[in-house]
Image (cartoon, one colour):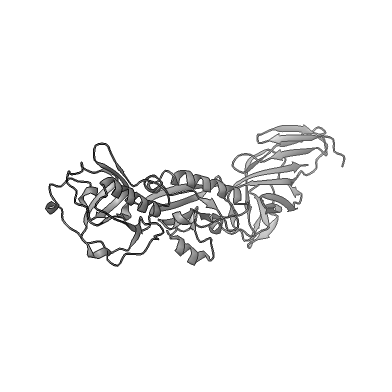
Length: 403
């Protein structure tokens, strides 16, 4: 049958007078719908059935796939120790403590700073401090007798010394034999003015225990993730978003940890530098829409559940949590044609069989389906399913020919 002309119709109700053999090209509209025009032949004596055939399918995943939640806190309590010589001033002791602290933080970030007003600015975070010198306490006390001594909590301290070549240890053998004072602090604080007479012990201790309730929680939208599309670019974007938010955390502000998040190209897991990983406590959970409530897990727990992942992983690969779709896929039309296929024990209106590989769809079979009526039908729902009958969310851009 000769082709006289093509008519392109986009989304809306239209009535066309066409010659026999004319082909009308349609594209689906918002909400995955297809609107059919009303066709009338210029020769009223002619009457042939109209057919519908899919020419091309484009798939875009849902803009919102779910959420990633991450909770960050300091991993463990730390303790600094420096030796105090008779000739040392308080400035010398503070300098030594800063050197010990730099070993903990992994940077040259300053923990303490002596001011011109003879006070000490201390940046330690939210938690409980322990020291054997009243000089580093937040409150002012009339005498040492007014300060209540405490025992160290039953948690392991990671210990650091200012000495060159000294490495971190779990605890010094004599750590818990000395006396300590304790206070709860919130971030930065300034000590009272230093007393005229300062009685510093031979070994000066300064320790800190983070409060569990001070953990910071971050939530990241999972944008455009789909098991049908490559996840590298979307995960790279997510890694950048995580870095931007983590750099605003107390861990970055108080301890100057490098909170840059990288993406492992092989596994798509999210990692941080080893020195940072050793210092932070991370729990994460991934919520994909329509899935069961997630469970918050530590990196070690994710390793146990998912198998081998990068050793400094803080967040597992998102694509491991996406639903599994089994190809090939079918494109369904809710009305306008008769039932065309028996799927999952039900007859359905299937207008195409196709596959999606790396985001590109390819038609496997697209028969010509006879339309029920020549009259206009508006906003006919379209949907795609996998071979198991699972409906796949997302936006479809379908090109159809009507002859």
